[in-house]
Length: 197
Picture 1: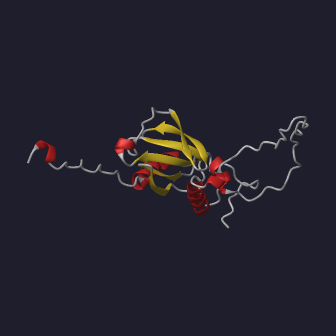
Picture 2 (picture 1 turned 90 degrees about the vertical axis):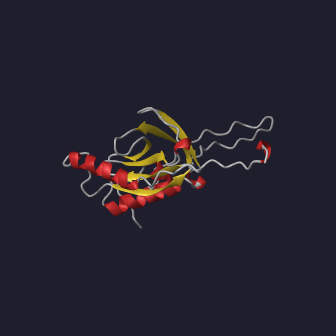
């Protein structure tokens, strides 16, 4: 058999890193134990890693703690990971829009990137509400209906058409229930509580 006809052996598949939920939970529980009693903490909440699933060679999910809720991105396939310096920033594109992630590192968690959803967490009445918001926020990232599109006045571009009227502020309307878009943008209802439906 000549060199040219010898079969090519494909490279071995890259080992994938396991779901990071357990190590995230462990690391942030340790931090929470040192922060007990601080005013920034919501005592009704606990540390929980929510909805970590593969996304483009990474792990993406939501970290819920008594003091913040963040989207968290970690490596799954090391070859696809793009490191960021500590506190460096990167914009990631999702169907719902562009979100800024910040570089972080931790001895237990390792290198990761975060995008703040809520901080502090005082508006959440209990863990079930925080978990629901976390799941819905993760889902909403992948729904184009949640993208914020600027509204521009329609214009008649025919010659001699009058200029479109300037937009006027509408009278204050009652606040609707919190939407998935609001979850992603860090907005809660006017009453400050999440409706768990």
